[in-house]
Image (cartoon, rainbow over all chains, first blue to last red; front, top):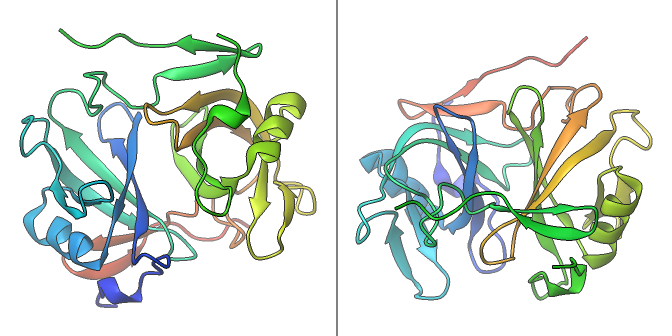
Length: 119
Length: 119
């Protein structure tokens, strides 16, 4: 079946959550949002492109930092209201310069930092 | 630092996206939503508990199907507006009886089914 980005289920702001996972390590890197046009651009350019809610603009991941995400595979979930992008990540994915945005764990009720910013 | 669920950033409906990842395979299994009380219950009971938007009720994953998620690690992202639960999944995570909800890929513009329902 031909994929049509308009068949995904977007929220009231026209956005769908997009989870980025590292192709090699399987690590979950980040979660951000896409609109239908960001989905289209991601598939067409193979550069993962989100919609920045704070800037209200397309956000080609790594455009300014160089920490781009090359699309390896694009997955849709059963309810079509979430997507998973498998990516080849250049540099750290997180704006704090950590490999992943999920660097804080809650263990025994305490917040623990799991990784440091890269040099 | 002691973790307080109220310090997470919830959306206008009081919900935060929660990504579930399989401890063993690293596979991303599903994405659902939690409110602050679901976060509390998940950490306290070690049984992953979501908030069902359709039923407007707590959803102890696997309560009826037996396909429970035992919490292995609870992670928070840099913006504190998304959580990642590393889980020990019993049975398939998806209500379609597939291992993961992300069983559809978009390849060369076509939707491709990557896995079948388990027996």
